[in-house]
Amino acid sequence: MFTPAEVVEKSKEYTFVSWSAQGIWNPVPMERGDGVYVWDANGKRYLDWSSQLVNVNIGHSHPHVVRAIQEQAAKLCYVEPSSTTGPRARLGELLAEVTPGSLSKTLFANGGTDAVENAMKIARLYTGKQKILTRWRSYHGGTFAAASAGGDPRRLANEPGVPWIVRLPDPYAYRNPAYRGRTQEEGDLVVADMIEEIVQMEGPEYCAAIMLESYSGTSGILQPSPVFFKRISEICAKYGLLFIADEVMSGFGRTGEWFGIDHYPDVKVDIMALAKGITAGYVPLGATVVSEEIAQHFDKNTLWAGLTYSSHTLAMAAGVATIEVYRNENLIERSRELGKVLRKGLMDLAEKHPVIGDIRGTGLHQMIEIVKNRATREPMSDFNKPMTDAMKQAAKNLKDNGLSTFVRWNMIFNTPPLVITEAQLQEGLQILDAALDKLDAYYEG
Image (cartoon, rainbow, N blue to C red; front, side, top):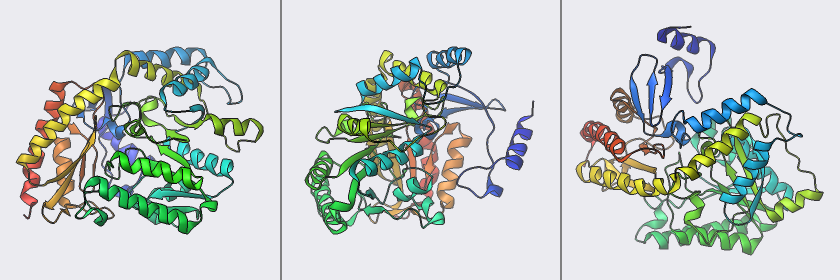
């Protein structure tokens, strides 16, 4: 229909791009994908090193999911959400099977932001309390309430947001001053004690829930020790708060477990927000899963929530098929084992390249933090400022050399599809190695 140049031209003229001044947008027109690779409209191949936005967990164009979508589309594409379908019933059942603890009943939404919005709404309706406590370095979505809940600086231009969000300190061992002179576990306990004091100061009788990313994503894959989440669970129990686990990015095998919170077995999860890997991005879908106790509350009390596309029929079919792929191909275990290969490769790069200040994550959910100086830990690009030329050049170098990945501030994400092979991991690490060679020129140590 259009040439590649026309696709770019007309996209720029007639459509908006997210989170950007429109005049500087220079998109690559993409054509197709297969497994861990995508091809642009000019035929250039890219290794998808970040699963797009850390959502294409099963790789591109998986035949089992494509077939399920095609078969469902031939029968029924959509029905209003007060009706139901077989795929909806089955996907609800599957989520109850794979999510931890007593999580048992799901409200389906359009994506991660909607899942988070509904998680907060349900917590407030269930408890009759209004405040939701969240971390500074977090991202929970782009709408007013979800953006307010996230500490990500993308919220700033639209503030003030909703008034009932309370900020908490981060278990960020690499930079939080609470960790200076302390072990990870000691620092985690200090931060948790600070969180308890904030709960006390805000009035537990007004606090509905603590909401945390189980294994954070775009804010830097922060990686607390188990003692942190154990203390959070104790604080929730002591003061009558619900615990909301945001698993939008860390769910569905990304960390080598079904969900990031599974690395912390001492935590009682009351509500979980899901998206991304639930359909691997093939069809938009979000989900808010609640405990049996919360579900029973809404048997007699109205759930004041709803969406035209809740339980969208094609999304339900895609979700069922995607979970079948995770199970049938043992992708959770595969992520865990290949994550060890990825970590070794990143550690080898850190020995060679002084600009790597820190490596965080587990499974196929890992990132490297780029610094100007390892001793001072000065970042190559600041958290709440535009990306520096050095990091922009690094991102361009990776893309030019066939590696498509997520580069943000001073962080390079290493979150490939769970179907990646060891050979493909080495391919990606080699391209990353070459880009780091150029970044080393900016090192000031």
